[in-house]
Length: 244
Image (cartoon, rainbow, N blue to C red; front, side, top):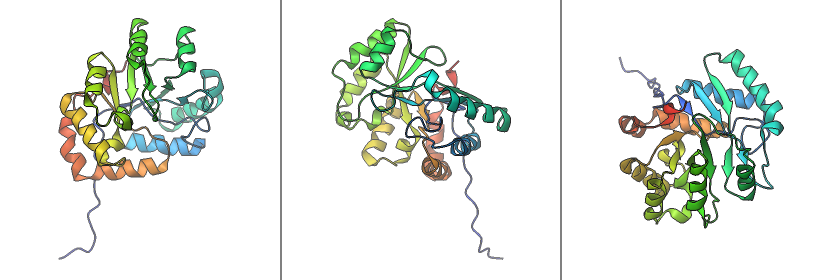
């Protein structure tokens, strides 16, 4: 007998269980606005197969001048609720550091907050490249840090300069790509660049960069898609789950 009911599409799990880029500390940046939203988003991450979250509030001069002390009350409230509602998940934090003067000061004062085996998630400006990026990343490696460049595929000034990506990656800078870039949410150019990273072996970490419920809905749809199902076998070499 013909059925008028469509079969519900299955959400396929993510190819990793440790997510290193999200904004789930309420009210400290442009991410989750309150604890309820943060816990909803964490529940979605659990549905996608994530067990370990390193959430990363923005740290940017004059905009989000966050530090461990200032975020502590909001972070601890979420962390305590996660322990009750999702006891099989871990919830820790670092920061998404903008490479600005404040970052360099924190580096020099040894006040950076790494995660895992001394990893740091850092981001460049979306407006223009940092003129001494190579030198700055090298200085971090000399201090024993392992820099991970957040969403390099979204820096539009690099879109037509693949040599810059090659030089950055070959110098030891790791790349963290957004899941929604792979989905095409930020446009075809960004998606194509992400696929090029995948072909070159430059896609070291895949992460949600989750800010709000709309991001979660878009990720849900992508994880149900045939495009994601085809890509999944190619995403098995990610370094996410090597985070200690």
